[in-house]
Structures are given as structure tokens and as C-alpha cells.
Length: 291
Image (cartoon, rainbow, N blue to C red):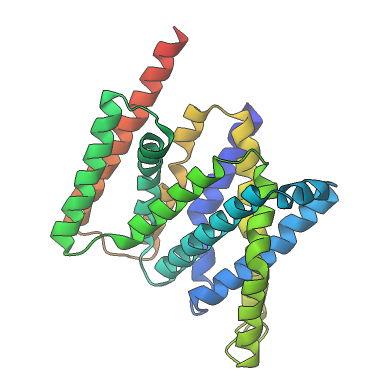
């Protein structure tokens, strides 16, 4: 249990400080960064899988048409999520990106009701409704939908819903996801090189190093999280998961000086209150089940 908590905290801290990593290569276009992230992530996780002598699991998954379609769909969603997130971070919208991951748990709950016939308790409905009102308030006061936050929340929410349909280990699924996107990403990067628009190998040594290590930087927290999920209770993970968006928010406001207006404070406050209600309700419900 203790090791599981350590793994989970480490994973979420890495995700939480990730804006600092992406900011170091902010002049590289987001699409190019995602291309490198796909290519090097595939190399990294495939090496791990082969070293663990689990390549036969990949062959078994590929032989199933349903699994191929599922992982292809999740790969596309992951690509969109990564692209929007990296663009947001490097364009000065870290705070907006963090909101997406605050909203995500509530989106996942809503998907459970709509697609998995799950039932919400009264206070869960209150939290979902309050978060919705927070988004409506932000839309009215700021004059536009918080689209960055919503795209990140819904793409990752749908991604989680799709991955819930499979029983394969997370590392095997992630290997296939990056594998499906490997050739499109590689073709895109080669095209940039031919057109002399590629940054890889043409900038500083640090930049090239950071582009290569996007694979390890992406895969390590995923592997840690996948391990933690098998060792730690879901309610405990529910608390720990807020480490990442909280760190992202603090980094955006205090390290990079992003705007956090009174309007955002009220709208975000409504969503944070919704999360607090949702989390506390889950703890109370869990204790009542134990009795």
C-alpha cells in the first residue's frame, strides 16, 4: 500500500511539474513536440515490454479486431489531448489547462451515468451541477467557452471511458497507442526535415535531448500510475489525483505570471467547491459501506 501511494504521488508530481519541461522547448511547434512524444514514447515502452519478455501480449491484442479499434480510437484521443495541452502550456494558458484536469473527474462521473448506467447519489449530482454552473459562469463573464479546459477534460474523459472497455495492462495498451501513431508521427517529422522545418538536431544540444526524452518523460509516470492503481484504493487515488492540476495551476500563476482575474476566481472557485463536495461525499459513502 505504502509503495503504491509513493508511485501514485510521484506520477502526479511529474504530471504537475510538466509545464516546466514543455516550456523549455516552447519555441518548438506543439505539433512537432507531439510527433516526437509519440515516436520516442513508442521506442521507450516497446523496449520495456520486450525486456520484460511480454511481446506476445501485444501480438495477442493485435489479433483481436475489437481491441485494435479500441486502441486506435484511444490513440487519436490521446494525440488530441497532448496537442491541446502542449499548445496551451507553451501559449501561456497553463491555468486553463489545469482547470481541464480539475473538471475531468466530474466528466468521468457524468460519462459513467450516460454510458455505463451508473447512478449518482444526491451530493454527487450537486457537485456535477455546481461544476456545470461554474463553466456557464466563466463562459458568460469571459465571453467565450473555456474551450481548452473542456477539450482536455472531455478527451481524457472519453479516453478513460474507452480504456475501461479493455482488460489489458496499461503499458501494453500504451505501447499499442503510441505504435499506431508512430508511423504518422515519423512521416510528419521526416517531412519537416525534408522541408527544413525540423528543430530536432538543428538547435541546441539541450533542445535535442529534451525532444528525445519526451518518451521517458511521458511513459514513466504512466507506468508508475498503472502500478499504483493496482495497489492503492480508488478513493485514495481520488485525493492524490488533484496534485497534478494544483501544481500546474500554481506554476502557471506564480512561476509564469499568468492572469487569474476575479471572474476566473469565482468560476474556478465554484468548480473547486464541486470537487470538494464530490470527494468528501465519496469518503463518507465509503465509510458507510464499511460499517
